[in-house]
Length: 291
Image (cartoon, rainbow, N blue to C red; front, side, top):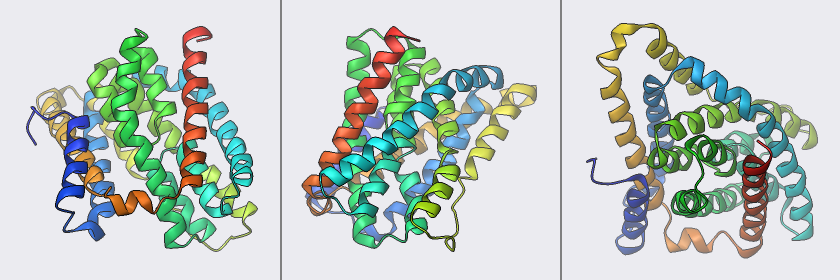
């Protein structure tokens, strides 16, 4: 909770803790990280401007649609090719295409997946998220990407919002604003994808989890832009939000012990890696050469 620990280091410390002494409250970990992440994202809204966010959102719209549906289609074929359970495969595809663990949490009750299927999908996503937090900034600097390019790449090619914000925040303030805005706009696609999923899996009875915190993020951004009085407290809220994000990543790392990693299985991991390579390289090439 100090300024000396960056999000990647926090994640690494969590991994060390998980595999040395274990997490004493592992059964509460997912709920805690989910709540803390949502609060932190809303807090980051107080550091953003509506006009800049709209500009970033428009630019990322075509990328979002293309990447989501191409990833879902490719994920379906890979799942069949690797002979992976249909529900596990679909959860991994949705997690890669939209917003990681949040998408899996929303889609799981729609397809009525069991605990093993959901855990395997979450394990794949969290493993790749952990790698992305270290890999993406290094690649961005190596290719001399601008903050705008890096923010857009992060938002589309990194699964979970926590890792998107963590990676982009270390790259620069513009990268953070673009990445957060595009990623949260992308998260709204949980709703149509969940509805399509309910038709494919022939399940109309399950309730859909809508990410309402995105509305609070937008409200915070509007307040910061149009209410001058918030200028006094806004920097402090953003600072607290970044601490919350760092703690979130520590808790995510603390939930990834060796048993959790082993339970994932090789084939689901291969599907997740294949989809991730596809979306990461495809998006990067498009941003560099065609954007």
